[in-house]
Amino acid sequence: MPKKTFNPEGLPVPRGSYFHVAVADPGRVVTIAGQTSSDAEGNIVGAGDVGAQTREVLRKIRVAIESVGGTIDDIVTVTVYITDARFYADVNETRREVFGPNYPPSTLVQVSSLARPGLLVEINATAVVPEANLTI
Image 1: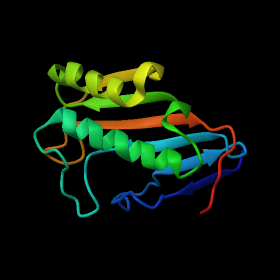
Image 2 (image 1 turned 135 degrees about the vertical axis):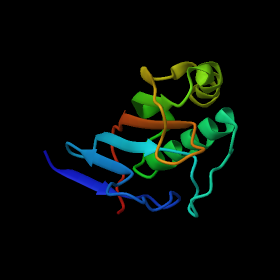
Image 3 (image 1 turned 90 degrees about the vertical axis):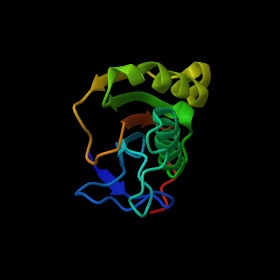
Image 4 (image 1 turned 120 degrees about the vertical axis):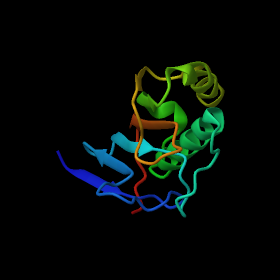
């Protein structure tokens, strides 16, 4: 199955060996790498506030899916990583705000830490886009 990977405009260039988005078979299955609330300069958006960090993470996921002609409603599953189970309610509330009543299936995992101190949440996503509009 052919795969096209890229980093969409509007998201920081990854600091590791990955791309933010992959589109496969032929341009319909879209995977979005785990997003955190780090901005292009590496600053944490919403430091100390899991709701603000979740909002920023989901904003970045929206940028990624829109970069291939999709919408937030095309997301079919997400995996959410949090550093403290007490964040569950805040993360869930923010997800409801962003996804509305059409929120996707989800897996939530508590981890001991994320890639950088101060990051409280990371989310990756998979979408199915009817007709991806790749201009990369």
